[in-house]
Each structure stands twice: as C-alpha cells, then as structure tokens.
Image 1 (tube, rainbow, N blue to C red):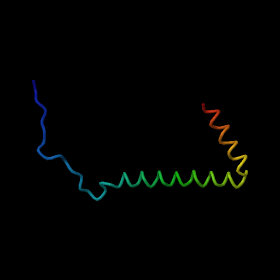
Image 2: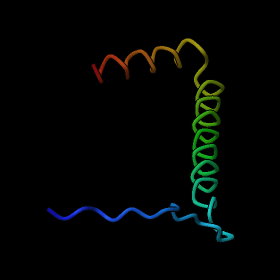
Image 3: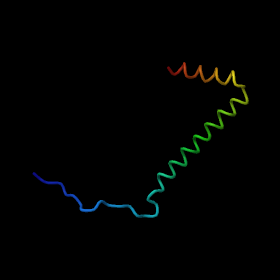
Image 4: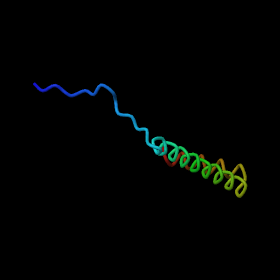
Length: 64
C-alpha cells in the first residue's frame, strides 16, 4: 500500500496579498451591515416607530 508523502515544513504564503482576501471580505461585510443599519433608520424616520415595528413583526411572521 502506498504511503502519503508528508512535507517536513508546511507551505507558507509570504506574498504581499496573503491576508488581503480576508480583509476585503471583512470590509465588505461591515459595509453591508452599515447599509442595513442606515436602511433601518431611514424606515424608522419615514414611517415612525409603531409602523416600523409592526412591519418587522409582520415580516418575521410571514417567514415562519
């Protein structure tokens, strides 16, 4: 039976773009979260708190 080859040292990525993908995803997620918060605040100011909470409750009830 063949044995798997194991390297003595794992490969490391020392390129300048090594952590760039993670930071781009984190930044995109933070931007999307910020847009959701801004949208929620815009709906709150436009419709008022009572209508805002009623819309959220009705939306959640429709999902479940």
